[in-house]
Length: 216
Image (tube, rainbow, N blue to C red):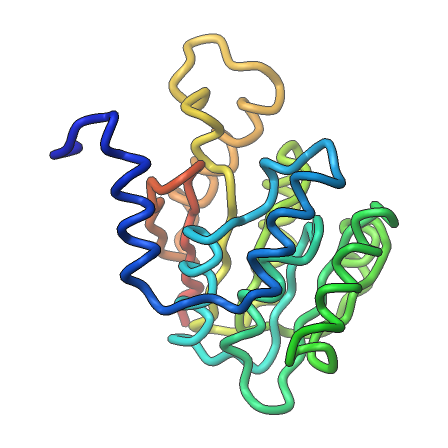
């Protein structure tokens, strides 16, 4: 339940940002460029979600991060802020144009040696991946979320965290007759909730983030 008027929501978001630690300028510019130079600007994590990803990563202090869905690199840069010294983040995407933007801004950041961008179908990559990760972020095609989850759970270290974006899907998860994509997200959320190998919490911020911890 909200305790403020709807018309105050934007003002409160601005207030929150003004009273929070300033983010690097390259992130502000990357968010702006993502809206100007792509037809999918709403996919960029942005300040609010980006700070959540950064904070979670800093609390975990991962040695290894896997990201499924790079877009223009904003979320990768935020997640990389929590990497241990010598740690690595691998980010997968299939769009070379978005990859060019991501590469440009990653090269401007302090994390250019820590982030590896790979242009490849995520499922193809995952099925061959023998690595293990402390933190995994899923933000790619929603109809594959359940498949990603099943594979990634085995790649995730015990006690590691898996974050899945867009799990409320603009509120469509409440619809009685969901479309195919929404049905896939509903299935994923149910699968996570019923899995005895994990514990989870859906954070109802922006489009919803499912925060999943792998048990021992």
